[in-house]
Image (cartoon, rainbow, N blue to C red):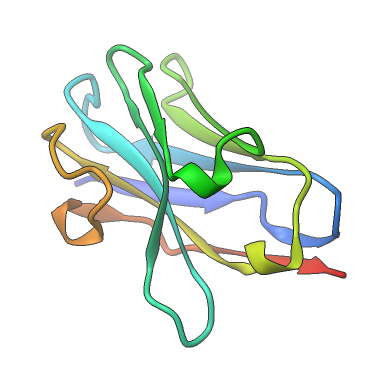
Length: 124
């Protein structure tokens, strides 16, 4: 059974940084795409970034390019999201997710597995 467990969220001041982790277990993820999504109160879940586990190719929503960096460590079966220059509008619950195929990686409903989420709060 696939399990995804996020960690690393918390309270940070605007301009600060956080690194989120997503520990994956339950199978080999070499054929998977892994993604980060976020959901702010009263808003829909939105795509943040995705990465091919096998190649390391990464994809970002345009508005976050340059501030957020997705990466993975195959030996640790862990994905990361480095978030820099944080803004109050980055406040949300951040989720990691996994899917088998490469297409439509920006759509939440295409992902089969989800973590429980980790809260990120940026104070201005």
